[in-house]
Length: 493
Ligand code: ADP
Ligand code: MG
Image: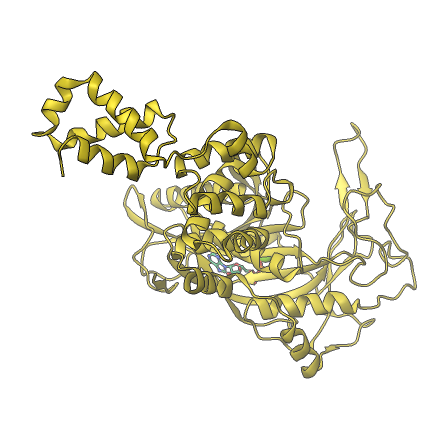
């Protein structure tokens, strides 16, 4: 395993008509704080409620209403900052970011600008080949979400749903440290894993609890950063990868044809997998940020931060190292297992007290494969960790071979049930009884005198004999026993 630094160029270049190019990506991830109440009001935040049923007078911006900071949301932001190995700022300031939009009744969003609650941090991003790259975090700040405009319910009317108005968001801003869509995808997965481990955001991108603004530029290797375009509000990892690929190619084509990139905000169209311009930098808002006079600067107590630190769970990186050292797993296998908290927990329940390599092979191979194929996850898995563990015990004590265990696994996955009972009922027990195996061997030898004569000169033919015996025992013979006995009977020593 090696760790690459973002500034070592020379990797992941893409070819243009006039030479190689490097993609540069920086992400602003908006993560909704897992909290029952909003950032400055007590209104409910539950997803999927009747439109406008979760709107307090503060969220509707009635005159004279005052925001009151939700201590729990602050705590969640601090937890997230610690999980991102970032500096926690004991003094931060809420600003008003002024703009007009029908789903923003206040006429401004309360956000943090100059003094965010969390400063610089770092995320270790795991790539598919077991390698890692570091992506630096610039900041994390707290802000309010806006409401939602709905334009497709009526031919000439728009609707506004303010349920989201005032919901707490953490905006996690990375440095421009990613160099490919794969790295960006792996970064989002890692940030999502971290907030899920921490319980500070559910990371559910389909429901909009996590979305990203994707900044993309291109440059020739070694050159200074190019002009970026920002693709707004991308709500799936697949869309983000498509947007990056399209956007990089678009920029390369423009530059190679002698044009220049204009800094602008763009949107992604998932139907065509393309991006298109929304507004240019010249049209960019002047938000006229200023400190919100209704809110005092947020002061955090060092001891309070220390207390939060003491309650942090084991995070993916630490769990990965522990799985590698305690269970002897490869970086790749450990990475797959810790990517989701409940996968890691499932693996540990299977592995404890058993052959951990065998457990990891079964969990990452058969088990995840079957879940994927059935479109299920661990929560609604038809096989429990306890049942899979029992099946592995039956392989270890040689009741069944690995091959038969796969059949048992399929039955368990499809119909449920206890592995020992399935093996008993279906008569799948491995035949270790030497007389029974010998009987089958004798039959095969008697039926193929020609092959028996040949095998003395061509020992490779042994495989054929083993295959025959396995077949005639329905795969239940113990392969080692078959091998040993066959060698003896065929005079191969
Ligand atoms: P803005 O409000 O203009 O979006 P932010 O500071 O919030 O500015 O975010 C800027 C984002 O753009 C960061 O994630 C940063 O890493 C990224 N970024 C900055 N310069 C570049 C560049 N040249 N290419 C790609 N991404 C960039
Ligand atoms: Mg931005």
